[in-house]
Amino acid sequence: MTIDLYHMPPSGPCRAVRMVAKIIGVDLNLKNVDLMAGEQNKPEFLNMNPEHCVPTIDDDGFVLWESRAIMLYLVNKYAPGSSLYPKDVQQRAIVDRLLYFDMGTLFKSQREVFYPQVFKGEAPNPESEKNYQTALGYLEGYLSKSAYVAGDKLTLADISIIASLSMMEVLDYDISTYPNISAWKAKVKEEVPDYKSINDEPLQGFKAWVKSKQAQ
Image (cartoon, rainbow, N blue to C red; front, side):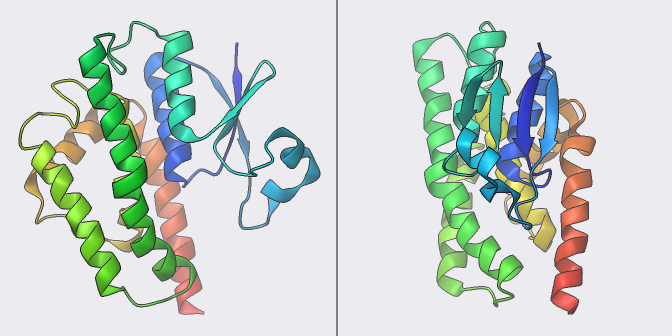
């Protein structure tokens, strides 16, 4: 069965869901939602998701939003034996911890750097930048102890975090001072099937939009 995915292609959370679906072999019927045009506020979308956010899935009438919840749902339902979400309780707990780290620390601090520059044209805020670099420092430390963020295999945590981090490519953000992150990022890009079409191409399009906006 094909699952409807309401998404905006450059969105990190939307790309994370697409990567997981591709890895586990779940077909998605992609339905673009133009957030810039306010399509998420149309009555038909609000009736489905009153929080008017993407990604949102409709799996034969079961509607779910929040990317990490969707990723867990897809694996639990369609690939319960996948190493993306280990069965071992302690290994799974580490994956959960890194998913929460992404949501509450990394993505949160990154958003405070990214959004003002991209959507408001503001100069980088030193305090926001400091908070983001602190989060990157945590991740660099985690990757000094294991090949992937939550252990020795690719998991949902890697997918969620690379979807977040890759958004900063729009700003040409330099992570060369974090060698473990840089090496991990290159490795994951090679391992995820169709990474370029799911991630690089939408991000390049969004980057061009940002540059045209800044030139106005």
